[in-house]
Image (cartoon, rainbow over all chains, first blue to last red; front, top):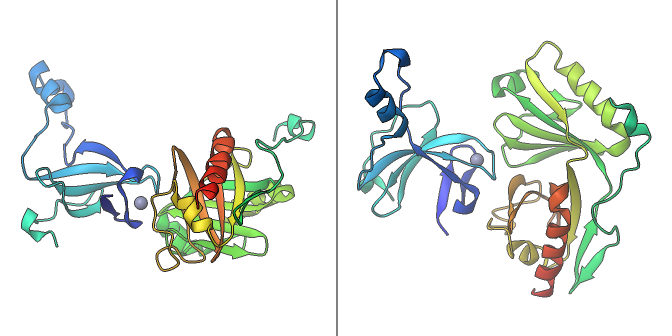
Length: 97
Length: 187
Ligand SMILES: [Zn+2]
């Protein structure tokens, strides 16, 4: 089973986690200034890279906290995990192990 | 508190008899007082303890004092428990210790129920549905965490090398109990 390292609980089985989509999506400061196209892009359009992707994860059946992870979408390897609200670490897929 | 509490009889969600299968005893535990406490970690560090229970233990462990326990479930979440007849006293004491500090304290005594799983094969029986490494090195005596057992979310506490306590929501109780009985058959 894939182990995911929760920043609070350490390495735990993947069954305890839920996926939360792309991380670092900033809500527009003034939504009323956006047109429909810009607003729908904020709501629905996400990156879908082949490679390292910054994602939100929730340790739903553990500490229940949200955190962020860098995961390689090609190999499913987690590069690192880091607390919610902190900046994306400067790491690449080669940094695993 | 609601007046009805003094009139209503509390019934167990499962048979109260201990079931022993291949040396693994699955024993329903009596009701307990349970309080869910949410508090900012910085405030917890400043206060140090509530109701005589330290708050600074690592996430995934529990602190005990007499019959009382504080399970540290997350950075800002504890489950404080004690004897069933001390619910109001325990709540009042914690609220008193935290007077003037932003916190949430919720009585969840009736939400959870407990089972003790003990015996040399207790670990194996739990691992039939729990994905955690339950070896003593990875999950030592004093460990306490939220996790899964089959389809149900549980709290798992290691009180002794060969004795665990499992808590689940009341509606999952019979599922969890029968799951463990079946799992013990397979050990
Ligand atoms: Zn966690």
